[in-house]
Length: 176
Image (tube, rainbow, N blue to C red; front, top):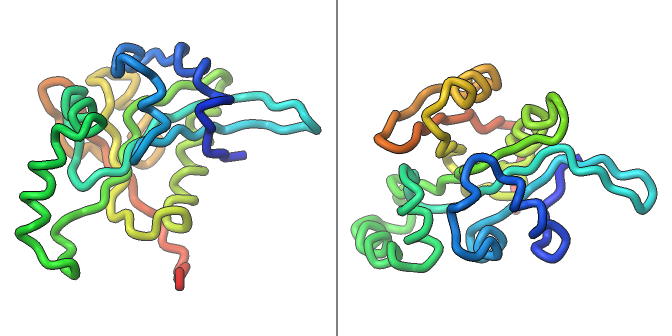
């Protein structure tokens, strides 16, 4: 089952992040503002087993470096974003709303795949304005195999990372 993680209950799990353990000085950042953490969990009564965790951010650009994520978290990049957004009308779709998965890890086999699929199914409902689901993945063979086997396609290799893009399912959901 997909859940959005609260900082109070999930901050300790961030120490297990094998992809970007050093990203922020304070891991509280992963739960603040446009940053969110989601998990695939099994619940039985009051017990909960965490199977996989993904850290995400919603932003108006495609993050390509860890520095860009840090700058976005601290607001240093906001001025640049405001400059770009000012060039477009509100109705213009040229400014995308990107849902970016920047760190993902699993505690049991198949749980990472399940988490990504659950998240993809939920994005159009939770975030109807999202136009792209992108990863900011490490440039490793394992990351490539994981994302391409889950249906993502290679979007752009960068110096530090590789962006993959997932299709957002269209269920014909209309949010009023």
